[in-house]
Amino acid sequence: MSLKSMIWNGLLVAALCCAVFLLYRIFEQYSLDQIVQSVRSIPLSSFCTALLFAAASYLCLGCFDLLAIRSLGKSLPYPKIALASFISLSLGHNIGFAGLSSGAFRYRFYSRWGLTTEDVAKIILFCGVTVGLGLITLGGLALIVNPGDAGRLLRLDTANVRIFGVLALIVPVVYAALAFFIRGKLRLWRWSFQLPRFSIAVAQVAIGTINFILVSACLHQMLSAFGDVAFFRSVTAYVLANSAILATHVPGGLGVLEATVSYAVPQEASIGALIAFRCAYFFIPLALGTTLLLISEIVFRRSRGTDEEADERAEAQSA
Image (cartoon, rainbow, N blue to C red; front, side):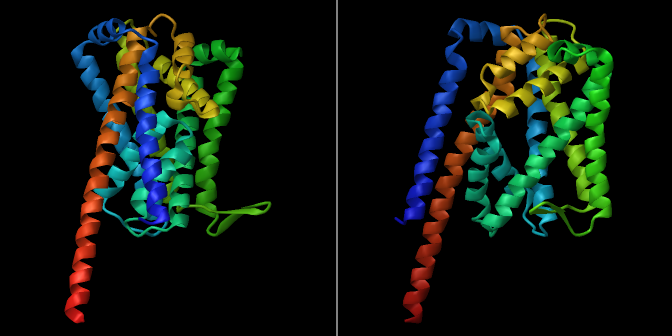
């Protein structure tokens, strides 16, 4: 076994152990009775709808990778991209430092399919920019439409919150304008960046925003089971919570998500709503992603073994 294989096998085992530990950490603060009662308190129709929103969000995240690969001038079938993206992000969302943790899994898959280390690094950067654009765009809309909740959390008056919302919406406009007018590389001090085509830049803003709308809709389904909460209140709560999670890099947003959402919507953010949201968007994808990772590793090892046997037979026949 080569050193590279030993390193990757070690990382795979570490990731699986981390996934098991995170499941324990997520649920250790609640008793089994609390978890069961909380999930049962969510109407089945609401929970299933939330699962659909979560699934649609992960499909959007797969489109992040698809756009990134197209911006590189490469081509891969979407099912492969969706598989790599889902496994990488379902684990990365829970491990923390999603850019690095999901990037390691992305490299594991994309390197098999002919992409270089540089290509994978550009994909990670592209997806990170898309996440930022989506979060800023939806955050700007939330600050304008629902300034009260954000102002209470940020300790700002309504007028200033709306100003910040308008300033936030300028960011994606400037990004798209730069992609339209600058054909070559954008240079900032010692760094240079290759902007995507204008159509891809617009798609980044649109798909990034839609992704966060879908996650917010998943949370809204859970919160609505415990009270009459407006959709944009759920959007504001999730955007602020996700911003805090990205800033702290806490694995799975443990504690950060609960604290922020509970402060933004104190009446509806019950234990049941937040546990159910974690189940729909974190726990179930984590379990599926871990299972798919194990299956893909088994399939890859078998196919590689078959290819090596075929090569050996071919060499023997030629000799």
